[in-house]
Image (tube, rainbow, N blue to C red; front, side, top):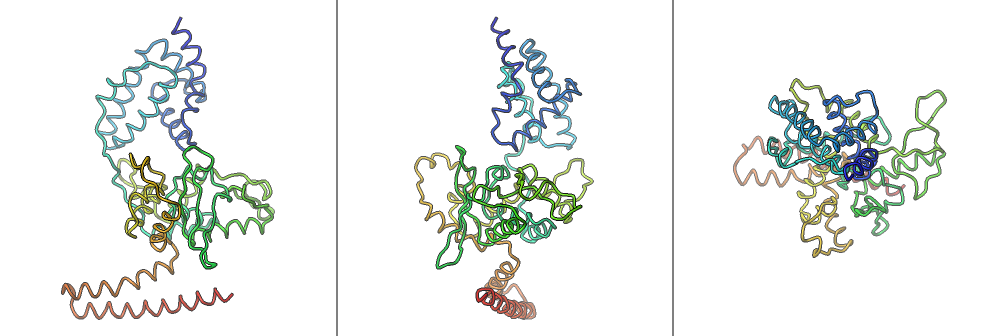
Length: 400
């Protein structure tokens, strides 16, 4: 009788229970994709939709736990062979198992997980990818889509995850001014959710977002604090192929932003087909921007614990004891603003100001010849001339 009740509830509602268990739309899509690969391997209703396949697996698994157990074992053995053949990583296999395990737990399918995990290959505790360089980020920003600069600068200067865009409205971003000048902007991440927290973005990122919103206003959209920060494109001219109309604003979901960033990487030549057995890129599409944020904040001298807070990470037992005010957090973040600014002029300024120190150090250590130092000195002069041009340009903009 107990098994019949489980079958009635778990089997027919397994799909909806699984969706309920995963709050993030990005994670949900990722887990469903992993489950689909598993169902394809065990040849479970190949032509049916995911809801029917999930419910059928749950029903059969509750009736016959051994069938579910050995189906999972065979799939993992196949995936382990791919790991040994360097087609996938051990981490990819474990991520597939996470999706299957969560689904079985929500559907009440009894599985001996300790037996299953014993045979799994070890995986690295961290990925071997790197953060993108500032030059690579600038190339992404050159992709011909009005939204790309605002997206990249916001993510790289705040450290937000891709899923945060599903919550982000214009009213969740507040500029912070001192002496009439914007020094940063506060951003409410996952606003309205239990995991809501705050981070900041650079003035440059805020200006790019503001420019995007102004373009939408000028095009006829009614933009207010409830407007989604990122939206689908619209008909800018008769005959053009775009989505929707300007007054019918449709949110650009995190999945759409992910595709946009991937398109930018491929179009700008930062992604190329590899001859390797598995495609492993030097830096990840979205998570690479979070790594860039953390790296640059560390280089600026920010406190590590404050960086973790701005990234939405747990700080362990300090969650209960570390109490920093928003103002103190902002003051620490301001140390990193120049390090997080993607603007090309700002990057040149940093290069110029760092060169004199480099020359002094190299001279003291006697690591360069006289000719090399003279060459660097010439570069300093050229950079200083560029700084003066930038300063004049800045004064001209302020006068306007």
